[in-house]
Length: 139
Image (cartoon, rainbow, N blue to C red; front, side, top):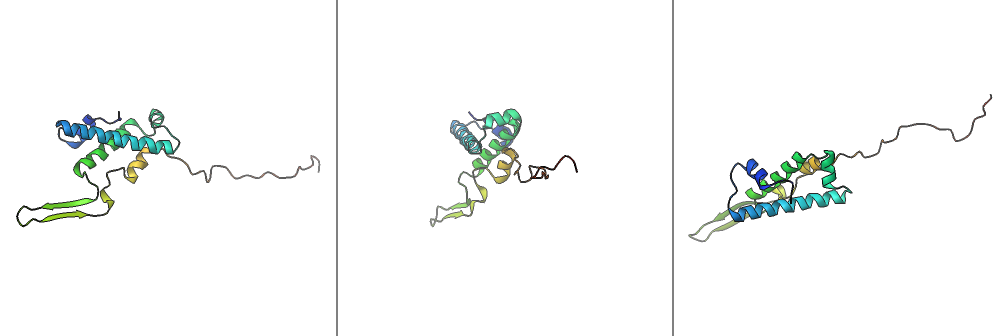
């Protein structure tokens, strides 16, 4: 079960999703997206549910991202396909495929919204100096 529901997708899509086949497809896509997110969090050494409980990311952010990805998939079920032409007379068929500009997966900005902020640790210590020899107490 994913965090986003078909109701969340319907609200953002602006039309009802009532056909049983489309309902099943949207639910399957929501599950697929959730699996991708959970797997990425696990590879980062994190648990999505724990991060949501900490508020990084928030539940609303996860629902928004999952819904947006599914809506993108509804409008373009085959990523990379930019146009389709079918003609009956004289049998004309045109499929135009371009780069993966409209990927059905998550975009870089969506991953940025989901994954917690981590510092690089390059400047995690303060500069300081400790002498490597003991100085005598009396001068």
